[in-house]
Image (cartoon, rainbow, N blue to C red; front, side, top):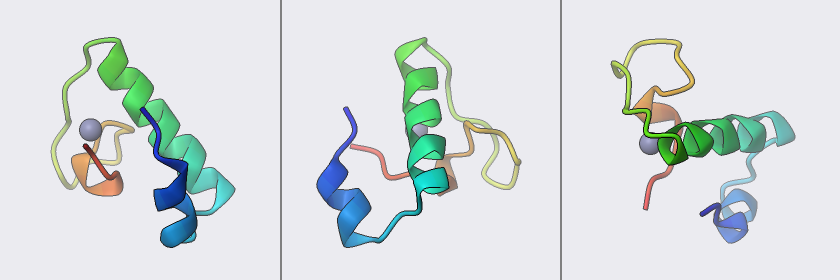
Amino acid sequence: MINRAVFEKYRYSTDDQIHVAEHELGHALGVAHNKVNSKSIMNPANTINY
Ligand SMILES: [Zn+2]
């Protein structure tokens, strides 16, 4: 689930919102987090998880 209120609160850019959506879609498909410092879409540090 994407929390749009968080996007507005933290002023995510459109690119950031797409990035989070892709990351969460990865979770929906069963993909786990990658390493924190990786540039993967599954880098856990780039997202807000609930
Ligand atoms: Zn995640």
